[in-house]
Amino acid sequence: MRFHYVILLTLVTSVATSNGTFSMKPSKVNTAVMVDRSIAEIQQGASTNRFLRVDDENSEERVFGIKSIPGVDKLSSYLNKQKLAKYLKRDKETDAVFAKLKLNTAGEKLFENPKFLAWVKYVDDYNVKNPNKPKSMLPTLMRQYSGESLSMMLEAAKQVGSTKSVATKLQTEQMKIWKNAGLSTDELFKIYKLDDGVSNLLANPAMNIWVRYMNEFNPGTKTTLFDTLRKHYSDETISQVLIAAKKVPTTEKLAVELQHKQIRAWLNNLESPETVFKFLMLDKGADKLLDNPQLKTWLMYTEWFRTKNPYARKVSLIDTLMDNYSGKALSTMLKSATSDYSRIMASTLEGQLLGRWARSGKSLDEVLELLGTTPAKKKVLTAIYRSELQAARSS
Image 1 (spheres, rainbow, N blue to C red):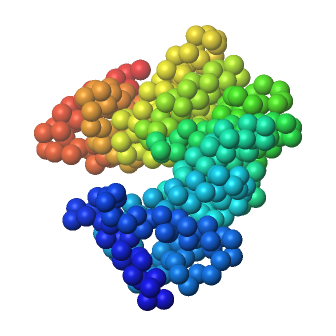
Image 2 (cartoon, rainbow, N blue to C red):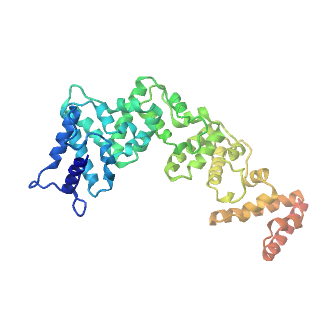
Image 3 (cartoon, rainbow, N blue to C red):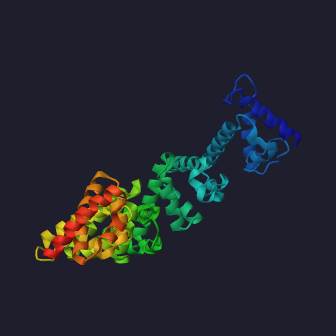
């Protein structure tokens, strides 16, 4: 075993310089040749008493903390290349090489393992050398992982520059298998539990997989993401999903597109503005409601609804707000307006609110308690509200 250490130290000395760069000087004995020969002899069952056992994938990690030695990463990479070259010379099966590189123990971190790309290159080189019996990487991976796990791993690997190309290729192969097996988009939707109230639905990586399969490989009746969502979720739930997705940069664009489709569907079904107000979750909280983008969507919907259905009862914002919120909540709504747009709206709504309160007989004291934030504000409110009360009595 002492001689093993001597061989290793000699080898590391020849490749580790002061700055950790890789160097092989031809004037000295090329100990890498001895290591290469030892690989061949070990594979042939020869005695290991004379050479370092570099074909034992554990040896590099075992020998006195080898990975802590400067330059050893490049040494390891060099040795791996030498091993792969010998495997290729012998036409070693790609499955076997996968195991030799210990990729069968990599788990879900497979595509983050540097040896994976080395194996990819080995498969490519193998196929170039053996054009009449090419090998695909996918069967090897399918023996290691379930279809669902593998597809999620591939989707994640597509987001990384170094693995994007190979992951996309493998995902294409996988989806072709699904298509040939007649897997429908509905079945795939359920396999990934996308019909099960998944939080952040549009941001779920499985959604990207499903959308690609639907667009490129769908073996059944042509469908859309929006149609599929409507099969599995209520309008209110879809609206909640889209509202949440619009707040996330990566899903905002898709959410906006889907919401436009949803609004067109509501118009075609003549959903009332009051119903859509609830679909858009505008009845769930008064604070900062006037700054909520969904309120603008609702206002546009009411205009489109009137155009499409001119004989329907006209629905105003103030009446809808009063139907859904108490006086105290309305006060909170008006006071929490922050943007110029919402403040102008709040001023308009306050005037309309005072008129309706006056006609309903609400007292001045109640109004001042709800809306009077400062002495100056109370003074103005008193004058306006008394005028509204006078107008209400005269009508």
